[in-house]
Length: 401
Image (cartoon, rainbow, N blue to C red; front, top):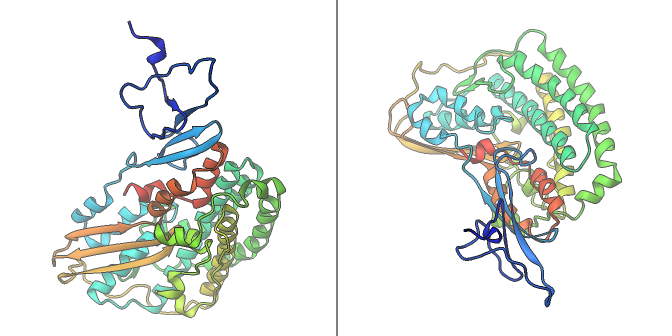
């Protein structure tokens, strides 16, 4: 008969000084330490893969000593999309539909990366108006994505009210994107050669009205959440990713800029209409969760500023170039990247001259951020784990690609 003390359900236990992550090795038993000695036991806790606060289907194996995190192992693969393999059997004008389902909150940025890669491989020059439309919808998408992060990050730290206001503003942005592309999330709007269709009549006034209102709402959002001393106490000095750590894990986007390095593809490797726009790149100092919060809040302000510039300076002309009905790039390979909401979204295509890619690789910013979690989570309290994960704004759709 099995000794009940040998059964471990859901957690692993071990004596002090012994670290493992995963299921207990054979022979390890949960036994009382006795009354003659004073010692503590470590627990290994499963957080996920079905957990409301892991921002997707993510499994964290967390070893804790009391309430303190000792070690963390990030386990991926529960949401594998097969995007890279599926792309080998899709025509070049169909690749954007796969990217929509990677980072499904920032679909325009993935579509934009694919379009840029194919255009450079085929030496296609798109009309100026197409470049401006792309940039405008990309920045609208950045606002919509950051609003999802803002609302859920507040929930992660115990705040509820600002989530409702964030969803109100996101709905307004998504309605604009739906009017332009015909879809709320899976846009399939940016294609090699330009965009699917021109801007609908009257959309410029709707966008300008959104920009005017969002300027005020953004100040209110920051006052409601960022101005709360309880929130500041939860995020200041927590989850620090310094510059060296950010570079070691190849972080990009807001997570990199919060650490003090102001690298942004829109400025440093410009594409589409960004060379003609005026915008600032917010940069943090310490790389803690507060800096990541402040960087993204300012990014929304700058994105709103660029959307307004795009509408006010929208050029006339065609919205797409004349491209073959079936795209067959010459043999070769190309890499193109965009500055998405979560960092560098890159596409590496190897062409064999056919109408489908020979090889396709999708570089996502979230995967590198997830790797850094194993480095920064130990030493924090268990209650801070969800908040730190939320501060990095990872998207599991582009991690399990």
